[in-house]
Image 1: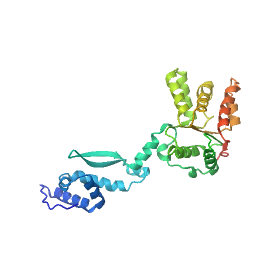
Image 2: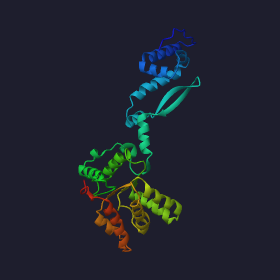
Image 3: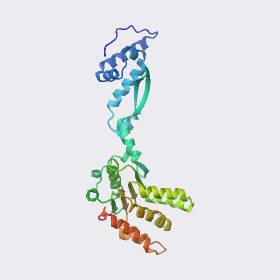
Image 4: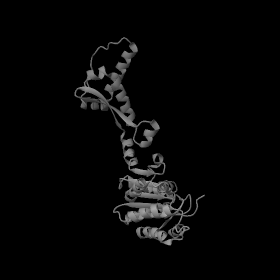
Length: 295
């Protein structure tokens, strides 16, 4: 950009010095000057609006340093400040930083998210300490399976593996996700049934039946009664068995044999419990064991 030979008039020497320094800094940045040139800005316009262009330039320099969502968070900066020319007038605009935009697209896929997505969204299968879980999940996925059952003791990285698996699928293969903490959410859903809010309850069951990726984390740790078994868990599994292309991940402290026993409940009705286990068994390759309690 050609430097103007102009006399800067100002009642304040400090303001005049600022304008000169800011303008020189812009001229010395070849890449930024090219952006301004392509946008159709003239030297006169830059000088007349030097405060805005200085802000634009400083923001441009800062944005070049931001490559990841973590850097957006660390700098508390999520938007790019830009100047554009519209019908001969200079307008200020804001748009999402690319790294933040990519993260936002993923975050917005979640209908329910019962883990710290903001800090764990980049957790990968290779990060899971018990690699047998990651390996088995990967192999079963490659074999075409659409349901996965991971069970084992507490603190054996079942939830971490489910999160990593969700991140892997969520960034590539699915557009809608529900990651459910069974102990927390099943109580909420059961409360709706108790309150006879049928429309809202039916809406939730329909959503969880059709969502592309459903994770039921900690199945068996929820308070168990006929409503949870017969009106929530069983209909969701039954409906998902009829849906094409949906993926289901279940983690539990119980094997399927144990799950069948605990869902027999006090009514001693074994049929719903058997049906639950049957749906799972018919859809998985094999149970993935995460191991015993990890102290």
